[in-house]
Length: 368
Ligand code: ATP
Image (cartoon, rainbow, N blue to C red):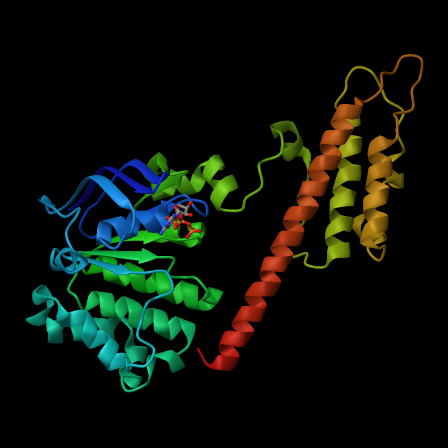
């Protein structure tokens, strides 16, 4: 339905998009992932006809060329944009904002149907129709912005960072709403920093890097792609196979920094013993298993002491007998690095859990 072919955009000498091609089919959610400045907003703005840069290439909607048309004529072709920052009229009421969206000729006959559809999607708006838009919460304003775009009776809805500034709970609601919009047959082109949630609802995705589409695939494949995980999903690069298979992970429930470090250090001691046993046939004289600390024994130590202790263990040379060989220092360094990665990951998990809890508490207090 929407087809972009070799779209390039220049702001003066700066090329913000280079030969970008993509498609959005009816009832399909397509996610665009990319770092800051990659050209994501430029892409949506160029399609919507509101980009101040110089555009070239081909954009068609249901085979009709739209690149170069005025923004209102592009809306008439069935394309609606919810811009970054929402772009609603703060001094107008919710109802007035929604009705402004119905100005397109294609929407006039459908005004009642579209209005009912918007209220069906966002029942909260029904109670707030007379409320001034600026007095609404961020999540409610986002509903108004999407509702207004839906009032233009679009065939493709484009959204630029719709979850920006929303609490995790409201984000969930938003993404659920987008899945509902999709079920009405509208195609969705979604630019989102929240790659995890956008890939969870999307059918396909494109990676936009430095103005170029670098990769495209099904959303499911992208979500499993280690490069995507590292760049967009905040998942640390996996430890080397030999290490990751032997390194016990810190329990997901550990949220206290000292407990996280203690569990990781206990895991380190265990893997040190295990790797020693793994060097047949040469026996290594290592501390007896009973001397290895358990997590319980370590809890209570400060994180700094725990990390220092881990470092000492890593650096401690293996005691040699005439027939022994030292455990390679590199492998100790690798294990130490893996343990520290594990601590970092667990600490990030703990931080996220804390943030989620705080946001949920705030949302509950606000009555969402
Ligand atoms: P972000 O995620 O930070 O919003 P983005 O991927 O949406 O980034 P764009 O806003 O499309 O990126 O910007 C792409 C590049 O084009 C950036 O280098 C930006 O500085 C530049 N750019 C965007 N708009 C203009 C403009 N009006 N004039 C000049 N340069 C611009």
